[in-house]
Length: 143
Image (tube, rainbow, N blue to C red; front, side, top):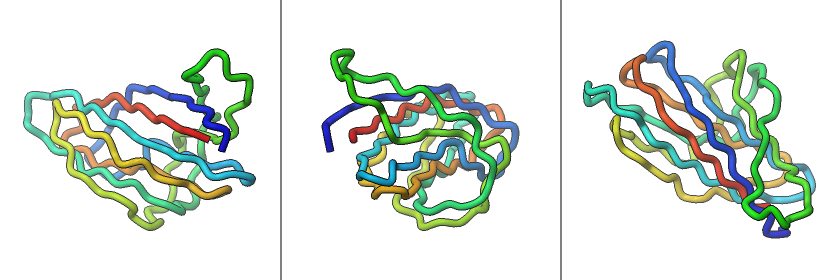
C-alpha cells in the first residue's frame, strides 16, 4: 500500500422500503485497499430505522459509471485504482455479510474499516424504514 487516501461523498435517496445495494467498491487486482463507510441518516420525523449491511462478493446487477474519488492530499501524484459505483440495475441479494447495523433516522454511523483484497468487492446494502428517508454517504479508501 502506498498510503494514498481518497474520499467519495454522495447524497442517497430511496424510492421504496425494499433492500437495495447503494454502492459497490472493487479493489484493484494488484493490491489490497482499506475501505470505510460513513452514513448520516437524515431525519424524516418518523423515527424510522434503516437496517444496513456491508457484504463481500455480491454478484450481478448493472453498475453505473465509476465515481470520481477526491484525494485527501493534493500533493499525491498516484492514481486511485479502486473503483466505486452505484447501480442502475440491482445485483442479486447475495454475498457474505461482513457487518450489519440498524441506523435510526437523524443519526450518523461509521462502519469499522474493511480490508478488501485485490479484485474483491464490498457492497453497501440498505433497507430504509421509510421511502422518504435520505442519507449522506462518505466512503474513505486507503490504498
